[in-house]
Image (tube, rainbow, N blue to C red):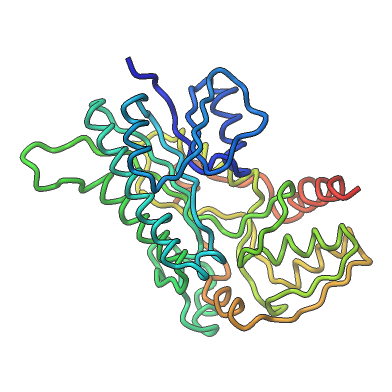
Length: 336
């Protein structure tokens, strides 16, 4: 008899680690983790780690033969900056890898006779505002507005959302016998800010990069203009959003894709927040034309009203609490 598990891809990252703790320790789930990297410090009996890629179809077939997969948290992805340097690789990982997992979930759903839940983190990168005037005229966008991404990562995420919607609502719609659909649920995140991981050069990392440089006493040249405004969210809220969406009754959901956000501020406002805690910080602005162009295509804020209405979404870390209770204390501790 195959062991029932929840599968987490990209499990070695910060979101993956937090999800593992919640599902394995608090919800007592059996967890199967998949990542290219080893999982250090995890030796619980209900956690099994596999080193490998979501693009390895033979590996996924082997997992299906050994486990009954009840839920998939698909976190693995090639992120925005790297995707611009390697667009073909990004497509392979972000689209073909996701398609492999959706097929796996669909087959498991039909075999089990009940839907496999598929939780997918998407991104504000799926939005594409054509110019600054349009961005100013539409400061808060809803899920179906301005879906014209300008980056490979954004294109990948938008298409993956559409694939998820297909597999959850229209899969094999011409078949004589209607198949069991998967239960696909996606979140579009704003810029995520973590106090526990070092920024890795992402296109929205200029905010956390300011903080880390200030805590280390190093100068920092921000790569966007001072007036550049986008939405952000503290990492603990991102994890809570994924878990709360997964726990929401399916009957109350009106969409397969939901916006979530916490607060929106300009790069200059971010600088001022940093200076409150690090008054000696040396932060200047030296916009990088290509990266600025990408950030200018993202909306100033995103409308998460549907998530608030359908499943009670509300962030715990607003702007002031995010800096005062989460970011500053933990980043100070990191560099002491």
